[in-house]
Structure formats: structure tokens, C-alpha cells
Length: 239
Image (cartoon, rainbow, N blue to C red):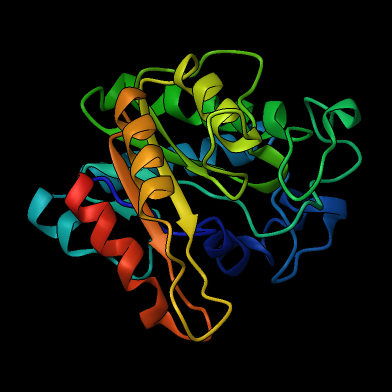
């Protein structure tokens, strides 16, 4: 069981905002406020919760628990809220020199330091389980260090399919940093008719195969989801 859910750490805003306001950016918890992921207390709490989850019987874990959205059977997904407000005092600090467009790497070292710390703790007690984490938006690019072997990264590729695109260059860099690599994409239609791009899509799938990408997940919530069906048909034929 190795799936992808979004922004799962939001559950901590509900659980701990009253008792531990200091765990949140600027000490002001709220539904859209990030955890201070560099603090030992937050790393310890998240790690402990994951360890307790993995102690449950597999039959219970694989069904899913809406009160613990991190849990995914033999993996746990950790993902921050969908904003870039990580605090001015975050450690490691933001890297403004890596700032780009929607996707960049200015918080990659920050986010994946947290992922690494949690994975190292959990790996000691549950070496056969996995930590799933996204590479998305401000942490799209890989960090400047390798990740533990029990981490799988889902790269939210909004940045192109062609071999020389920012998206594919970044995927190739990720391949050097992580053991398990996945992609997550957004196939949003912008009109009534499907895009006719079978050769472009086939070339992209071939690149994913060459990079040993293990899984591929899409969102399709455009104005006409049926417009993506041709892409899905070509993709499934290529897999």
C-alpha cells in the first residue's frame, strides 16, 4: 500500500492548537498555519504517532482511519499545508536564491530535513515501513542531501514533459536523491475537447519508465473531465 494524500499534517492543527500553540508559526495556530517543522517537539510528536500507527494490525491499517489521514497501510504520508508560510525563523532557512515560479526549491532543504528526521526515527522501530512525502511548489526541487532509503517522494510535476523541461530535469535530479520515486500530476481540461497529443504523452511515459518511476497519480477536475480520457487511454496502453 503506497498511495498519495494531500496536506495530511493539517490534522495537527485540529489536535494540538490549544495545548501547543508554540508548535505553529508565530505561535498563532489556525486552519491555514504551518507547523514549525524544525522544532524537536513537532518531529517527536509526528514520529511517535506514526510509530503507534504502524503497531496496529495490517488489516486495520489498510482500511484507513479518517482520524489519522497520514496512515496508508505500510506507509505514512506526511505533507504540509498548501502554502509557503513556513516562518521567518525556520531551520534550515529559506533559500531565496532558489526562488522560481510556482515550483522551485527555496524550501526544499527545510521541508526534506523534517522528512528525513521523521523517517530516521520511524526506520529504527519499523524498518520495513515507508514514509511518503511530496515534492511540490516551494519544495519541488530535491534538497542538497540524500534521503533515507525508507522515504518515497511524489514529485508534483507541473513543469513540463519534454526532456529539456524544468519538470524532467528536476525528476532526473530526484532520481539521484531518493530510493522510491513517484509522480503526481494535474490533468485539468481547459475546454470542451481533449488535447490530441499521443506521441508527446508516449514519449513522456517512456522517460518515466527509464527513470524507474514506481507510480503515477493524477488529478482531473477541469471544466470537462471527459476531455482527459484520451490521455488516460494512451497512458494505460503505454504502462
